Image (cartoon, rainbow, N blue to C red; front, side, top):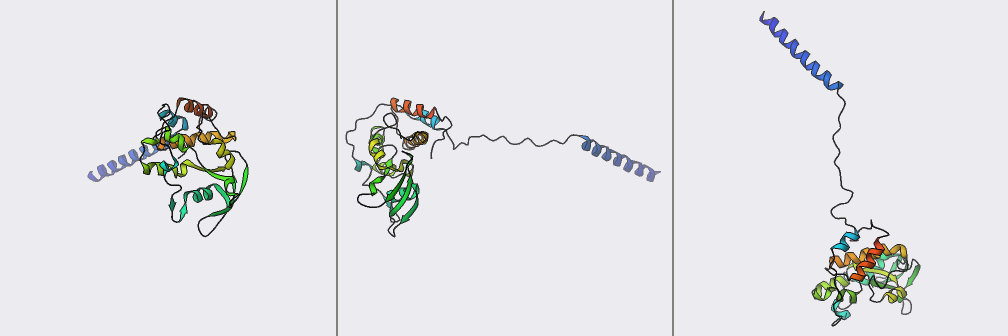
Length: 229
């Protein structure tokens, strides 16, 4: 009698387990809900949003401005100065000397859209110049006076602030801001303005009302332009 009860209990348990398994097989498979990821990372901000974070003020007096306020020319690291590093970064087909000098190369100029053949020489080197995207005079009048000498030197040698460009275009720009000068190459204007905004944000500089308005007009054609870092 006891043995029969044990057998009956085992059969009952097996039937229950079978029933549970049968129900699970009949239920529709459920997939875990995928994690929703933001299309914009925390480190990625639009140029427009960064622009809105900048203070808007009038220009400070230019009194006291001199190039030497931003260091004594290009800094040198590992035997290679900033100018040579930017030339090497921005040009293609470069030929270097043993002394870290770019002897020749080809620049796809962002300011004019032209291809410029660079050859080092007294009469030829100026065809390609290194532009401070935020002109140092403009930086001085929009907050750089309040930076330390080391910070100003860092700004003047920061790769974010520097571009190899067409010499005449650079001369034409002079110390203009976005309200007074923009690259003739219109497709590059969004990147140009975004880079100016990034520099001003990095070094806690402000923009003038006219400058901000000009930047907003440019970015209206490319609202998705990311801030350049």
